Each structure stands twice: as C-alpha cells, then as structure tokens.
Image (cartoon, rainbow, N blue to C red):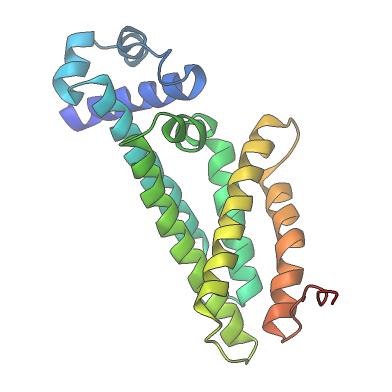
Length: 208
C-alpha cells in the first residue's frame, strides 16, 4: 500500500479517536489498532502523538475551509452566497462530527501549538465572510466601504455564531444542516439586510 494512502488511514483513525475520546484519553495503541497498523509504524510516519494531532487539525481545517469555499457561487446574489456558504459549513460539520470535535473542542483546549492551528483556520474563515459582507454591500448599491471595524466585527460574530450552532446541531438529534443554516440566516440576514439598505439598528440615546 502506498505510504500516502496508509498515512491517510492513520489520520482517519486518529480523527475518530481524538474526536470521540479526547486528546489526552486517546492512545497511540488504540489509533494503530483502528488503522490496522502497528504502533511503531504510526510513530515512523507521524513521529509523535503531538505531531499526529497537529496533522489531524491541519487536514480537517483544510477540508472544512475548502468545503465552504466550494459551496459559494460568486455569481449568486449576496444572500444566496451567504446561504450556500452556511449550508456547506453545516453540511461538512454534520457529516464529519469527529473532525469538528477535534477542531472546535479538542484543539482549542490543549494550548499551543494546537490552538494556533485552529486560529489560523478561523482567520481564513473570517476573511472569507468579510468578503461576503462586502459583496452584500456592493449588491445593495450602497457605499461598499463600510467601516473596517464594523465589517470585521460582523464577520467575527457570524463565524462565532456558526461555530456555536454547529456544536449544538451535532449534539441535538434531528437537526439537519439545512435547518441549522436556515436558523443562522434568519438570525443574521435580516440585520445584515437592513444594514446594507442603510437602516442600521442604533442603541437608545443615553439619558442625561
């Protein structure tokens, strides 16, 4: 069997084990057995438990960002672009719950360098969503140069909401990716739509 194929089998087994048992509880013996290889071979290919976990994070982060980008057709209206991006995100996280557990739960709770790997993925996702918001502003035929901080804040809020909702959807029986995406669209798009049309919500004036 080619090394690349066998290595992917090891990563598949590792993602499943880390996602279901957690980083600390997962053992290299268990991962090797699940992959159908010897533990020395796992160490030969992937060096250590830490390096194996990092390889899992990188592979799954790339798979998630690729799925979201592939789901968005730039020829669609802005709301459809956001909808398709969210649906791709929730579909991928629902179909790969162990991978999402590795990215959203395990990697973030065990410090550097794991958290930094996930942070890099998140920055890429936020930048992508920022672009979608700018497209929405352009499509609304308004000044597309929204304040930089406002756009960044909107993108951060949307990505954070998607992350939390994906964790909830995966833990709640009967919630489909389409339902999760529709929930977030209903939560976010009305506000974004009003903002693009020049009708932002404003807090009440402070009482004197």
